[in-house]
Length: 300
Picture 1 (tube, helix red, strand yellow):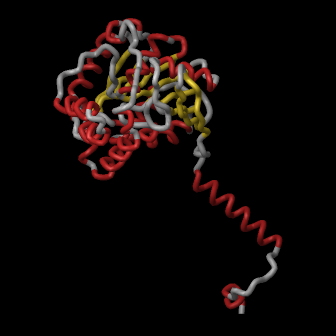
Picture 2: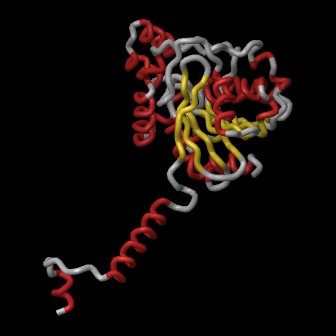
Picture 3: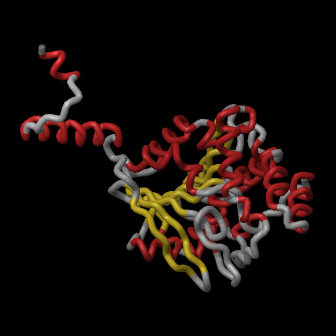
């Protein structure tokens, strides 16, 4: 009889005690599914110089860590780091101007100055910075211009302002596509570049980086007037006093290897580690190894 009563679809008055138990159970299940330290991220936009605005997300508590993505990507490239680091730090990730949900620009602007405005908006006076590729370039520029605001740097396959890159066919293809206004062709040339050779060999990761690149392909053809640091960082590395960890995939592009060696040889407090078998997107390709290196390096 008890079994039949449970299966009986006819409506019955809800018992208050049972309703409370079911609600409490639902809340517990929701809490478990979110996980400790994984509450929904706070997000918003901050106005920056001229006509710009930056999209950002914040999660966690503690000492701040800012994540800066690479070119042709957005905040999504940090998905394997955002929650993990937020268990120990207050983590901020944002879309660089012209990428992701941040606006394009019709006026001259500096990427490091945008970062300063973001930190001011969030009330952050000093922070660790983790940057990959373009994000590494921005991190170094910011550390040179606002050294009092930077504690530690993690630079993964970083760019470097003032660096002279080797000629490459994929770059010529990108330029031709940009001149033709073909953002998809520019993105496809990027996906074939040596920077993404390793990640494109993994079908799941290849689909992920392809979608991220498609999501932000407008960055190739926008009127993107980023003002370069003067003098550039390539001439000022002796001033880079913040402790810096350089993370490099062994299969990264040749220019990335050259830049990391150059920074390691000229910045007074830089050290480097090599992640064997990884390419340029080392944080996505080897997330556990990358996260361990970051957590071991950054003080709390």
